[in-house]
Length: 162
Image 1: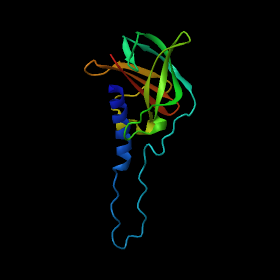
Image 2 (image 1 turned 90 degrees about the vertical axis):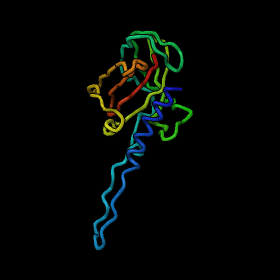
Image 3 (image 1 turned 45 degrees about the vertical axis):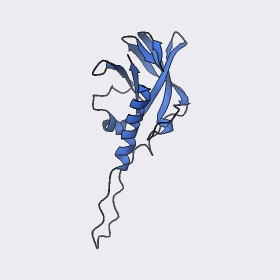
Image 4 (image 1 turned 180 degrees about the horizontal axis):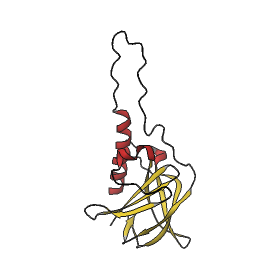
């Protein structure tokens, strides 16, 4: 349940940031068209098909989809499955499932929030991983491990409860 709250909150921030930007009304006699404001999730794209995102090392036992996931090295694979039920403010293409694969066998799965690189500063303040890289870190308070993958112009954020 906590994963859905985190994923919904992050996606909500992305959606809210794009819709809250208000335009000033044109002054009387001003013939210039209002500037187009940048949008967020309405233009965000994510791959439709399954794809390998990379390999990560989970430093301690966590839970993935409510089930135990042992510490170890895993290949993270994005699936084509959209996360359901949808949380308010989420985009179905940007909330998907990833699988944690070890020795060719799926050991666990979890919801991933896909954030285009141009929008990362709206939802994340930390230094992102390098292109094609990943970061695995314990979040403040020690309740979650965040897996952050940078692949093909998107950031993939996975939050795993300890």
